[in-house]
Length: 394
Image (cartoon, rainbow, N blue to C red; front, side, top):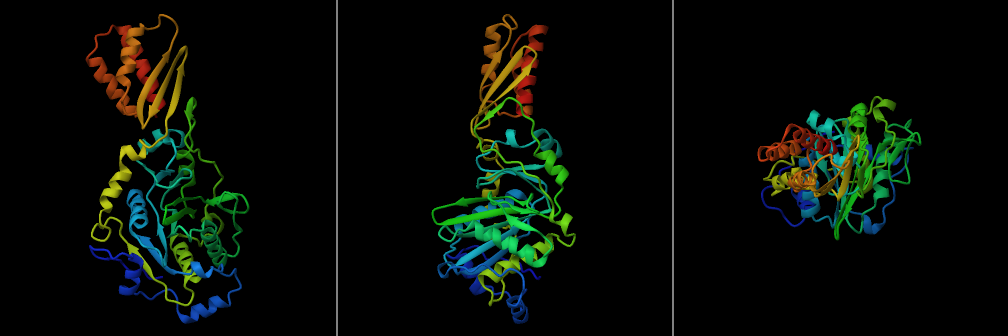
């Protein structure tokens, strides 16, 4: 399969897809001969699309492996592209990272200590759904269309059909939660979507050689005492496609899904595929700012719905209330006389408004102690309370 670079210039026409097709025609992947062979393929035939949904097909393959850049490209396409006569598929993958859904709580979903110590990126996407681990062994597939033509089931069936067509031994199906599974049990693809007034997109993962041990470690959370109304993930057993069919790799999946996409949308026209760089501001005007927004504390952590965490050590119990990833309040429960009530109140008031982040809590304690005269026993008590809040935050 050949790939072609895309540069569309600084100024956009109202319909990006149309402009690309008119000004930059590409021919590859299909010949008339291969199309005739597909017509006589004994595998499952493409889904018949209603006339009102028959539009041009367009495929982007991202050259970036940065999760925030790729999510920013999704946002750019969603906000700036006229898809009235085009269905667009974007194929992309990321360096190791964890991606949470728009309405999720990272403290409930992610092993944050391991994430931070491993310097693995955390991202919050614009769509809903659960938490996923990405690395280069995972292919992401995003389908963009008008809201009217949005059809998640059709997209998932397209992927399932592509896998069966190329590797007939695979027992692939789509379950009631819109996961793609193999052998009626193991999950190879999770899914989520964003529906706007005019444009919608549906994206999903496809595991072919992901580091499943690291996946389990990153998403294993044992957070007792956490009370949250955020959307929880539903754990599932996963498997790599490459463990079943060793010939399956990133390149073979790119090819088979792209071919199936065009087989469904434009079976008798030449395929058009564009290699795109989401860090190129000349092509995607304003995209660096979109990427920076997706990296920000206020988005990644600050969009977490209100929650609380309780830590207990012996007879001491500390409950931290968190809103927009900052400490909203701290409640200390202790035996009578353990610490003077005024000192407890002064300490907890100082913690209000601090970012709910382990290192930040430690810094806040250092600042507090530098302005407060305390005896050895009181210092020990302050450090205990700070340690409990730090544990709650990590």
